[in-house]
Length: 566
Image (cartoon, rainbow, N blue to C red; front, side, top):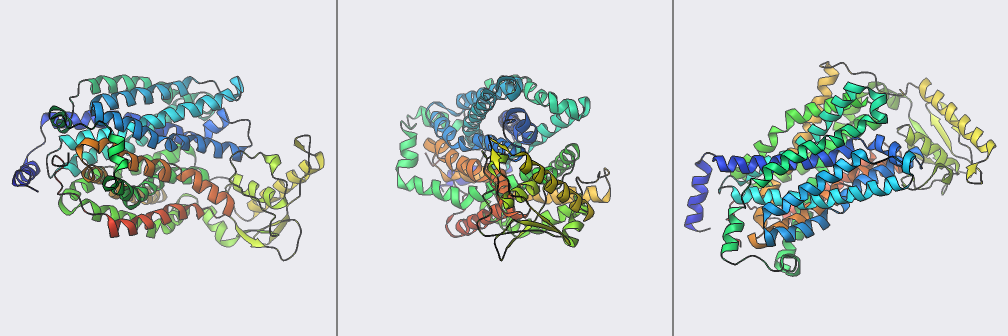
């Protein structure tokens, strides 16, 4: 690094933030908070959306399909990154992410007024998925623009601190979505909310869109891009430069597998999957689960800035790698402790009366099939496992020594699952009665063994309440460790002329595919295996792989002069 760069770095580290820099961070962060608010609304309301738009499927398939529709927005994010990243490197950062926020905002508003499956049939889920795809494309172009814009305004020695404010936006967006959902639920009641009130958070987002667009229109282009443009150095073919030249492509690949993939699964585990686990697996009521997660976000969010600022001093890599390792080593005990605190009766029942499904080899199908109907599962093992999964009952598997129907053992009680017969696209009356009898016997056995149908109310500010908040806060702190410094690190990896394109693709493949698919994959893994903690293997394996690759091959970037990389 040259003397001028070193001097700039030193002065930047000691100079207070200017009014213009504060405006840049505020404007970029506010718009990004809004986009994450839009994106998380769907995830937080997945159970209700499953009933509203996928009512043509049985409950398990409907919920998996709703999660897949949520995941669809993540799947297309890399394509949004390529499209909008190219525009950002060619015409500028400011106008590109002005377009993305309009696309995201209007798609969210339309979800709020979209007729349900009961009104327009199969067109409802089709339109919903199209809107999710548009949201994903918009978000694919948003983050890279915001992170690049802020980093290129930041002085040397403060990029970690400045860009960490952008990193808070995903958490703040989730917090805002939970706050609006909770307020609406409280105001109109659970029944009305499930019927029509869930639309309110989507519809009111149009007001936030107006404010965000107004603020972004007043922003100036980034100085790095203006300098590059005035010198005639903007890229004419950013895609070819970013991905057609091995010198840059290898950095893109390393950024994905050595940084972002692990960061993504830790992020979605610590925030979104933790909420899913509380409400869907531990059966804590929705309002309480939202409050608990929101409280952990309030406590944990400042650590984004703390770790971002710390990364300016000790480096980005040590903090990110430490977060990955801590998460991988402690997820199982933390989620187990969460069960003990949030639903102690369930934890006690699992210890005293384990549920075991015993079936002959080949009698069990894949339970995570998103398009399967109840009548597609006629084997006794499938009927048993599907009912247990629908009721969030954790079980272990055993192989029968001889052919015959599957059995469910709950403590000392053993129940034989029926084999079903389908005629004219429906179970025969005899099969339906046998299945209903099996379900009734299973529910009675679970109840006798102490398995609760839902978690007991958790008194606010009680010891159990604070224990849950403490566990959730630890999960959020892991998120802040891996996510707080990563925007600065990604910006510093690539040259100015193709930075928007280059950093956006690995970020959105990592967060869109590895992270965004995490709830769906984890749910399918649990449905197939039976153990309610089995889905945690997905983020643990990805985090450990990223840790190993990152430690071996990814270099520290905190002292890079990004103005020299054009």
